[in-house]
Length: 92
Image (cartoon, rainbow, N blue to C red; front, side):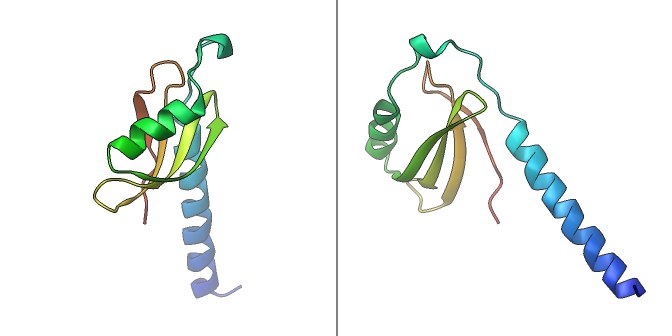
């Protein structure tokens, strides 16, 4: 493997590791019986101008894919009990 291939491989592995680490940074611990429905979060975000494409559960949080009111692509995590923003995954 030549030097260029090693550099490219290092960059790719670094980006993959960074993306995996970013997803693992957000964790919610509320009991599921206290959660609000996913539809409540989607409706709240739509009222704020979001175009919600998908809401799923990840690390005990609601993970939302879509576009915010400014048209910016978002992957955001929300507390399922309070529906407050927990964090964002940086978008490219």
